[in-house]
Image 1 (cartoon, rainbow, N blue to C red):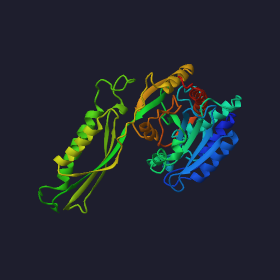
Image 2 (cartoon, rainbow, N blue to C red):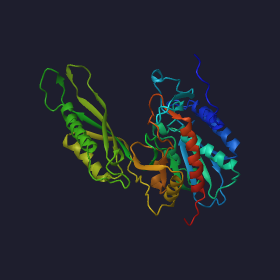
Image 3 (cartoon, rainbow, N blue to C red):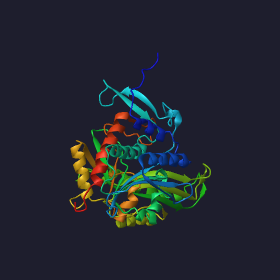
Image 4 (cartoon, rainbow, N blue to C red):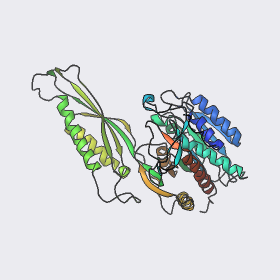
Length: 419
């Protein structure tokens, strides 16, 4: 039996599939092919192009649409081009084929939806292509210029920390020259009928505790072992983790009815290194934790807590990564960009679920510079599948995202300076 032919989709869907088929997968992303694809899009859309490299073979590609008043702060639309690795054996379809698969609708099983299955479909190539397709639609309406300049940034290596991407570029003269007034970046899918919008992120504190102690034969009760010392740290941090996980107090988040994942500090013991042989008590033990500190925490107090914990148990503390910059975009009447976002989503009948992002995005580098940054990916009624097997978005979700960004970009880029 042959399957029924797929419907005829708009050309934007084919361009999205082309983008998804480029294997910008870590640890060896094909940025060269990706750059050529973006340059082709820029030529079709008549957008100016700038490229930078903060490190060899790590291109930052910026497509710009000049505004009527280039002196006004611009609108930056950011997306990373890299994607995470896959376990191909667990995928039902080749992860870089970007096939379209009919399936019962997750919202209404009596209807059919068409899923674009590919690594990066949600994280975050959908967003980058929605930016470009929205600009394509705006230009197709005969709009030659909006009030403000728009810069579409395609940046590398976000999935491995952005250390050769936005972390360096945000301090580069080329970034300053963009004169950015507001910065849009990625969010996540939402299983409900609304969009997630992030105005802050947790701070990644990756810590390593190292204990040294007495060694000897495994048959003895040796005192002062490294394992005894490290377990004191492990037990305390896991107890702290339990307190945070089950905290049901009054919310510190303005828009949340109760504390959620972004409002509390998460702790996970991710690595334990010790031992040479089963019958030899190890002289040293290392325990590493992935700690994501909520922005509502007093960073100095939490830092003191970790150092005291290490001191009390006689172990060494090392920070593999420690982010302490202010990472909150205020959502109030003093933020006109936020007012435009609210107006546009209301006009489109889109509800917003405002939250603190539990992970990390490139927006964390620009908020401390005083630039309002909003993380939003236009995917509602969609399971969260970033970094998962069989990652997909539906065709309808992608097309809705284009429509959303068409209106949002127009609203933000036409915001008058006195607003």
